[in-house]
Amino acid sequence: MERTRIIEMDQLELAVASLLQEDIVAMPTETVYGLAGDATSDRACHRIFTIKGRAMDNPLISHFAHYDQIEGYAPVIPSLAKDLFDAFTPGPLTLVLPASRHISPIATAGLPTFAVRIPLHPVAQELIRRFDRPVVAPSANLSGRYSSTSAAMVYDQLAGRIPLIIDGGTSSNGLESTVVLVQERSVTILRYGTITPAMMAQVIGSSRLQVAESLRIARESAQHDANQVVLSPGMKYAHYQPRVPLQLFRTVEDLHQTICDNNVMILILGDAPLPKPDAHYKRVLRYDTPTVYAQKLYESFALADALGVGQLFAYYDTHLGEALSDRLLRAAAYRFLS
Ligand code: TXA
Ligand code: MG
Image (tube, rainbow, N blue to C red):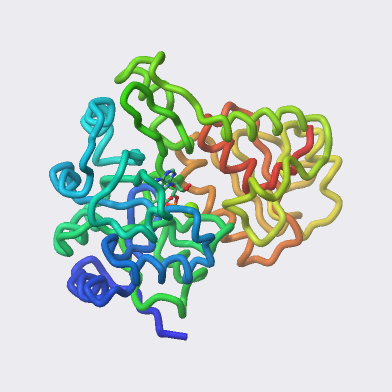
């Protein structure tokens, strides 16, 4: 066990020194906090997998301070990628590009591609600029659990495993970046995020944009199960999960019929009456716009875990958008009623 310190933005030189020693530090980004290490170091990259308990075949994203820095590491930048970089970065978009130079093969899991992101958060940018090399940064959580959107949440999951957490406030976005695979003539969405398919279609045209088969299958299975209480399509899609079991509801009636004990936390995304007054439950959280749902989702999971409730129930009555419904469904391991 090592002692984990939370440092302020004016102590960035400590984080730079850690990176130079191939240590891993938690850094804030506008999406979620990341576990940053030297992208060119096998040792640092290997450490990240160990700290998270992450499968070695799941590659890491390389983070850059600005576009010009990418050119030294990406021998090929398709013109569609240039268009997307121009339109959406710095910001919450990750582009998977062909090949890489100097990036550790541990980070890319030996793939012939590598993922590139330019975060918007000033602390992440400043850290990478001072380090003068890209950093790999998966979300700062244990594998399978929800991401962290504050320094305190990183501490809860990873204290004793990393030396430093840089406190850069609460992540303004709250969900991980959109991930796209960019090829010569097409762009394929691999993970939904704040940059939506519609936003990208405006830039590159909808005929060039597609959704990965794996995302479509997950979505269709979830819709298929809509009328049953089932654990499906299976744990292999599970991710972003609280320790407390999460159950989703799409009608108020189901919510009312199901709650039979008071040791529950209820998360309401939208507007719904409760069968009993709020005070009868361990905690009730209500959020009323999709931007706030995204900002608060993982924080709500952390609170449910901290309270040690028997179950977390989430009700939503509005259209959530692809990214939020993807995260909620996976976090609930596709357990939902109605
Ligand atoms: O918002 C974010 O992207 C955060 C912050 C810290 O930047 N990072 C993040 O990293 O979410 P992580 O490791 O939790 O998720 C990275 C995703 C994974 O689903 C991984 O499989 C995918 O990106 N990925 C990385 N490199 C890839 C590649 N070469 N080909 C396909 N997918 C890749
Ligand atoms: Mg992650």
